[in-house]
Image (cartoon, helix red, strand yellow):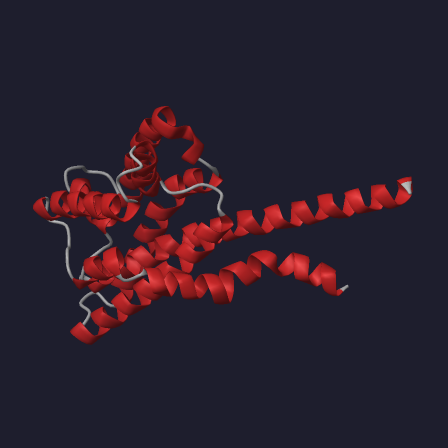
Length: 226
């Protein structure tokens, strides 16, 4: 009996370890891919997601590279969240801090080198690719559940502190503020901004069902089959 218990315990620990590895890898992949998707949005010049509009707008006030500025901006928000609601901070929050800005800058540079003056059809294609890739990245990141981005943490914390306010309305408010500030500072606002703000949910849900959740559970299913 004792040996069986030890075997079962060892098997459970191995399963937990495998699950955590998949969650970490999905988080890392989601953040890297998200950064790449921002590069496609930038190349399209048809609008960025609300927080990127804010980040790009305020970035124009500095002499820094975008990757470095984005990291510093998120670090400033991270300090606020640390004292406000540190439970929202996880591995994904920290990786997001260092990964998204630099990957966005890299992909933007690559696409500009490949096509410095994209035609309108190419810009629309870049927007579509950016939307699909961002939804896929968000699906991996959210399903792994190892901490939310700094921007997400703000709306989530407000909704938890003020239960009468629905999260979706708080998010619309924060998105609107970000877009307004970014637009006033010269950031690119367009159809891409509207799509990311209001219409990405169904595609993220589809990626959750078809890719992210099956990927997260794949280890357990393989073991059951054996």
